Image (cartoon, rainbow, N blue to C red; front, side):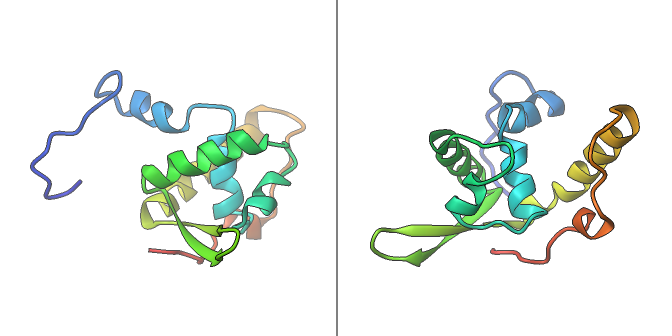
Length: 129
């Protein structure tokens, strides 16, 4: 963190790619980010209903991992039982250009991939700080 005197802890190395993969390098995490950031899905049920059919236990784990990393934040919308909506933080919104470039690369080099409409390639303005 800026201004922090504590030295950052790295899981494997100081390599930026290795560190990015430690957080986002599984089959599901970037899809959760995509659904919140690009598709505007904010509730657990909406995220669980994605086309890739993420299992609920993995979705809960990925949401918590992203929350701990301060990529997303949550806001309670129901008290009993407690239910939350998830929003990108500024840190999470910075992933928008990366996701767009990944989609462009796939469209260019993986024939048959779906080409998102221009409006889906724009990052939603919804932001929770």
